[in-house]
Image (cartoon, rainbow, N blue to C red):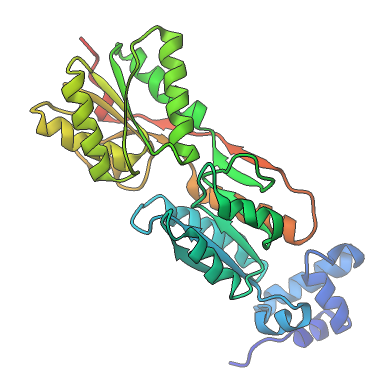
Length: 333
């Protein structure tokens, strides 16, 4: 079947090709009469018209591609973020180029994307003090940070409300009767690690509880297990642990079992992110739920606004909820 062209849409809507083009482009739609826009959009939908990204790119000196940098391909939270970004960009004809980085390769990852002349970047790899992000703020393509932020840079960020998320987890454990609550924190080079730790420490002071914290070297299962083993050996009276993310939480499960204790009945455990299939582990893990697909879509929305020279928020804060499952259902004492 032949590809439906812009000229086909224009003929069906009985308008000039240039008018159809303006009606189909959100950035120029306002200069076309509303009734004409409606007619063009209806005909485009009937015909199954899809913009030709190559032709559009030649006309506008754009590549119609957006670069995405994620820190860890194995971490399941990034899949929904990327899916949300792709969905948010697709309607405007953008494709995505995805690359993974570690803290040692972020510069290389960003450079590989800018060498391909992407129109913008969405970074999920930012650290609190990030020279790559600082450089992009001064002279890079339009950039949005997602899930993490960098301090003291003028780049929009779409993030979860970590203060509220940790409060939801801690308040739930307190309601279940726990007073000896520990925290396995994430790396303090990342906003998600330091903000969740600070929130936990503040809540312990507010409640008048002892501060029982151990830091993990990464947001993965093994670092979580190692840190939890240290904390349990040092503080055997702990009855609940708030993990900085779900993978660390799974590491806590491993450490609790290695110590001859049981998650749920002996030690309550909460995760953070609520990635898919947490309800299938035994016992199912209570976790702070963040709508990561929506986060990705929002990051795409903010970047598109920048590309259109529209106003965009500096920081977008998304509100988490708590998914309560059996890992915290046994009361303390």
